[in-house]
Length: 334
Image (cartoon, rainbow, N blue to C red; front, side, top):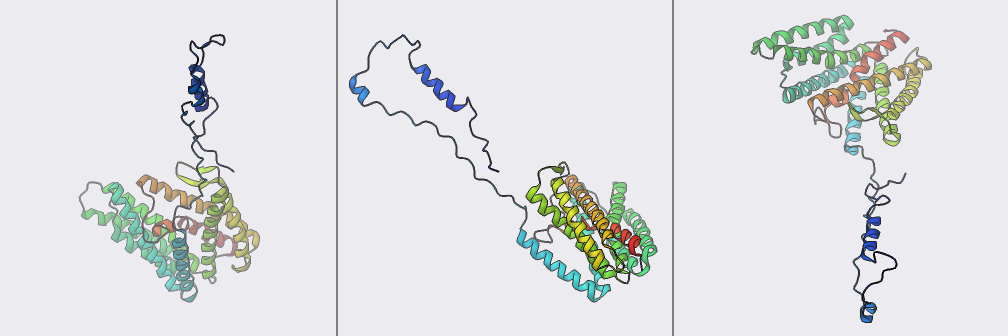
């Protein structure tokens, strides 16, 4: 649609004011003539009139911008995808290590921003050690091992913070326990998916659906987005983008359940894709809420074009338990 410039004068604006000035310069009444006729020479060589004001040129339409370096974002995304896929299908234990490293870096970013912006000192050492232990325990000992690691991590946060002065103890340990559940505990469900016989394909389905959901939301929202989804939390997200995420994820879910998951049926993939689109969107909005509270745009700068590790984990973390639970319900945990 053509863009109408804001500075076009409305009817009765500058042009009408010019006409009014001309009227005031002539005879006041129609039957009244000037007292002296102008000299003929003056009528032949009139003074040049000042140029009439020209309306300002309309601004050129502006193209929509993604707001990031798209080339760098694609390059980093492809590189991460190669590392993840290679480790996932070659040696499962290596992929567990990749998850643990991502968890530790994400915890470092989160605790650093909390201290910088809110002066909240969530203890990083017990969180990092406990977070890595959660991921490994979930892979080795299953759900029970993950819960034991969560409890021990929370206890370690409480004890570790006792070595500091008591001022701010409550807010620091609260933030620490929150970080333990938000990052490593949710990531542990990826390890739980990996323990199944077709674990690599379950994890691949989880990653593909989340990425496809985000891509559908971005593509449809960038092209057709008009109605804001949650303007106070994330002004860039639109309802049209949400519909795009749902459509893309449901289509990908049907294909993944039919061809990647042993015993899966296409209609189960439709439900799985719908759930992934909902959880990924809520996760993205959840971290946007955190970043708005902290007054920052990105959690870090480690990944060019993406921000930090936490900026990539925002939709993955809450989606992991959803996919794990639905896959167990549809095809079992073995």
